View 1 (tube, each protein chain N blue to C red):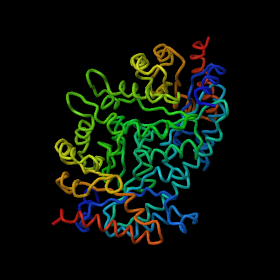
View 2 (view 1 turned 60 degrees about the vertical axis):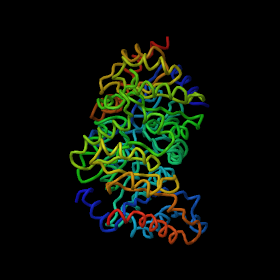
View 3 (view 1 turned 90 degrees about the vertical axis):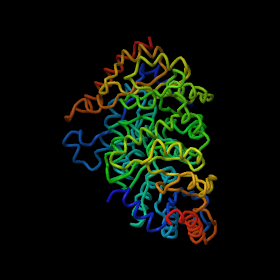
View 4 (view 1 turned 180 degrees about the vertical axis):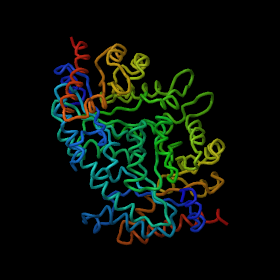
Length: 266
Length: 266
């Protein structure tokens, strides 16, 4: 089944747009767990089990695994298999390269690791995007307007009063013939949501920055104006407690966020 | 020793600006080698041994390894150790993410894998660049003007008659206080070299696209106007022969390219 159809099913069944970002920092794990050589995998698996009833998707941030080299990649391989059927898996790897290389990156993420979706950097243009987009059952989130301060450096570069991120959004909309393209838009930029939605009506948004980065669920939902997006939270769920009750605390925080979202499905 | 100083020593000693791009396609290996389960590593090691006298650097393209998952990462770990002392190692991974993630990517590439340099996508701005740039003995090549057709989609986005790639080049120049920043400029765009050099006088260029992609060594050197850059060739060296003599053929092609460069050191 196509990603978009699975997303529709899942979000309506769970009344949730929540994406749980797996950005595991071993340094922040509970003391007892830290000592386990398999702590990275065990922590993430526990978070997945605890939060799955409230989550529409999991987003695995490759940086937090690649710091451990090949063994970090092994942990990613193990974790993808732990994500339940009623949740989507997003490889937050932000790849982007020319045709031949992009083709291999797509194969690595979609086939070798088996992810449902991926984040891609659009800077190199269409021939770097197409090798991902041609996987019609999979899904590609292109970076649009990101949640960090540095977004101001280049994403607002302005041609005829139009910022680059808006132009990219319109281009990605034109790439969305198979209905498998989306856009990363930071939760810290809700005032731009309507503007981007106007030029990109069909794109699913991936909205990181809920929680620890300061984005508010209510404000995001109000400005999004529809349910075609994932609201992603990481640290506020993963480190809701640094004690042995971290799984319960994570479940509670995921449930709290889902409760803030459920009204849009009424 | 700082990367820039090593580069100066190496290029003057070898009279070479050649970077050999390791983009190994198992499908193109000699028939006998293909059967070996360790073919990916053996092919690359043989290429390194054969071409090292003529090469200033090796650039490992992560896409061609990640397609094999964790085992591909293991091969990268093995290969970095095979690059001789008198050659620099470049992780062509094109990473780019916000601060915390970028910090882990930098740790993965510089410390865990031990590369001398890395390619980074600048789209997310300074706070995504700084975690790499703060490794003062290492080196960071930011994507500027790439060699592919899709470069036209966003890299020429124009503010007050100034294309984005030129603005990025000037920004990266301002990030180069420690002398460890460079810029990726495609060999297929030599007419832009002088324009970029004018706004980025101190940056080392990484110039892919020599050989199979159609970039000419003579034209690139003429337009570069100095020796502050690596000219990178991949397929024309790796697949100079598809027979058992692939190592000799690769050495011959690397030597031919180095011979086209040596006159700039006279």
